[in-house]
Image 1: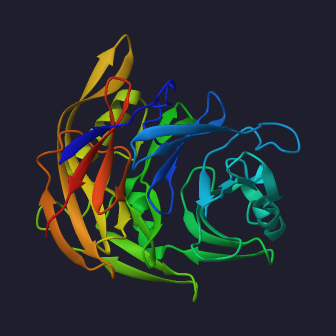
Image 2: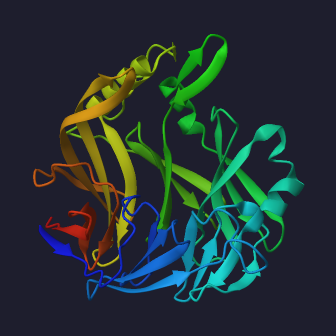
Image 3: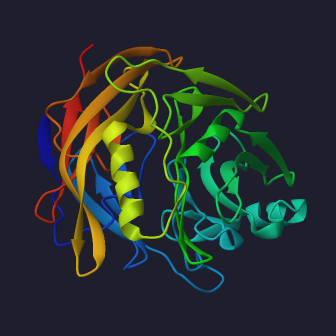
Length: 351
């Protein structure tokens, strides 16, 4: 493990989102970090470890992205899909010029799938496809979730039920104020593209779906860990009336296990997944509650290209939960804010 620092030149890089608004180029050389203050992409050369340029975009007008930029998806070497607002979804070049509009929202509206307040969130452009997009459909309370493929070229969509994830309803807590629902604690469903597979997983169970775009089908894979529980204990009670109670249930869930998304190592042809267990306490100050992490144990699981589990280990070198990470040149790069400068911890893996 080692640590590197990016030279920002005269630029102040946007780190407040911990690179949560960043995308890695297909060749792994450039990181494009969205700066919402300037409505621009910060291009960072990871080979040279230096800031390259800032690419501005317009918000309004015929050349604009609309009010929201994220999520965005890099397309090849010279274009980007901006889909923060599906009504304004469009493809831009990396000089900030609009090339074409994308009719994702029109297809969804015509199908009637958004009736009743349902919401669609795009999660991926299907690799190697022409105008095919994946996302999740939920109702307003996120009580159900479907995987949706949108074919914007032919104005069609495909719905796929994630039936094995129905049990995630046991991990849902509603916060109320009298008869009014004011909040939820639920689970996360995660989607990852890379390698030869599109993977849908969740933070609760040690299992995942593999989506096969050619046949629009799903394969469920389950795993057994020797180091951690394979699932969280269902949340109780199912309804609470205070922030404190909701936070305490959340802290208990993280003490058991939290599974993160899978990510792809194209050099070594394998997948990785972080998971962690956290010792956390709830702190009250002036009537407001917050979380304070005492310690975390970080685990890394390795899967082969066919998503068979190869190995798992505690990573004692990591003291903090990884926030933003990716694989470059066969090593895991983990974002590190180093006194408001952009840095990375690089972790090499030997099996």
